[in-house]
Image (cartoon, rainbow, N blue to C red):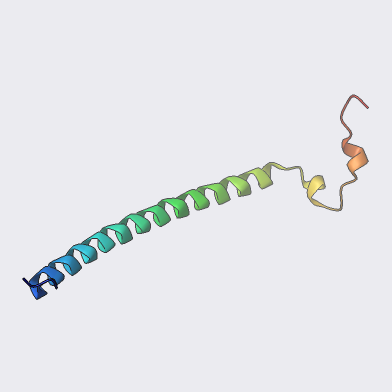
Length: 72
């Protein structure tokens, strides 16, 4: 009895592994694509929020005492 896998069996195993690797690569590419879309959307949202800030807040350093909560 031959204990080593035949050449045909080894080739079949390699083809299966290659197919699984291709599927995983496609899934990873889709995940990266969705993440990039989310990053782009978040970047647009941050830019929109920055544009909503009053212009005087963007210039100069802010003093934390100017922003004390109302209970002080």
